[in-house]
Length: 318
Figure 1 (cartoon, helix red, strand yellow):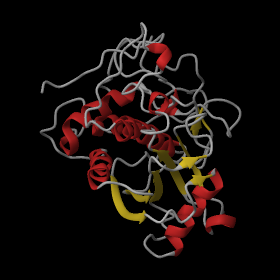
Figure 2: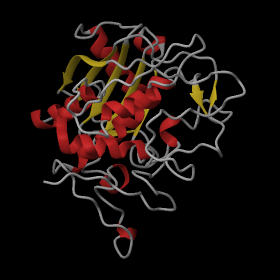
Figure 3: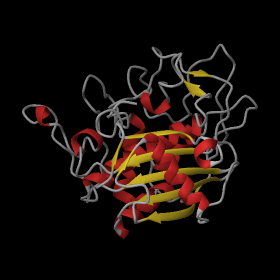
Figure 4: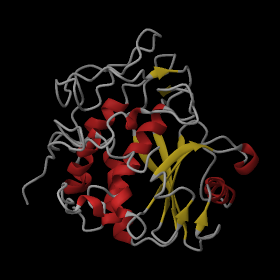
């Protein structure tokens, strides 16, 4: 995953959420579509109300063979998210992130369109070989605050798994094989292997030798003090773009780090849902470095994006 991997078209919907908080939702569609997993079909099928009819932008994968590799997707309903707050987090920061997570499957029919829930309906089009869709129901099933930095303030990819092991073994979290995913969020004072240099977040599954079980998980870091111009773009922009490139967008919640995290969290959850064990939906021949569904619209946030232009951003009147 590249440092800007979270910059995709679908996430302009997340900007919408950042303006509206937990009011995001979506009406139920008339029919439930699925993706065809037959070998001759490599690319996802857009839902009836696609964001644009153009095939030039917005995730058109004509040049990418997105293949299904016969593995499972997160089809069991609901998807239980177990949150691990690693480090020190302010209550307003936690509330913002949880409101976003809860809005993924909001049933608020009065919510304006587009919404985060409508975006997650697109994610739910992905199926496994039995025809089971990614679940549309997402809940926050538990939280654990590791305020004492049990594994230090400099984590590796393996020690991130040890953080999960501590949460599971200490009792606050169950071992939820069927429904559970584990989301580790690190505070601004925590460094993580490859953070800012190569990734802003990643997902994988735990090793039984470290955790005792194989559990899908994702990690996302708060880049507010370390590399906002890399992992919180476009709420911060690199110095080399200050002269003539697009200016930074104002963080809707006046928190560059958390507003940037929302984008990365959405990206990682979509990929975790459609490729939890790295053997389901991805492009490329190397499963250790796959191109996943969130990567197909790198750097695009709205209609017409491409060539360094993030697209037409929708914003609400304030």
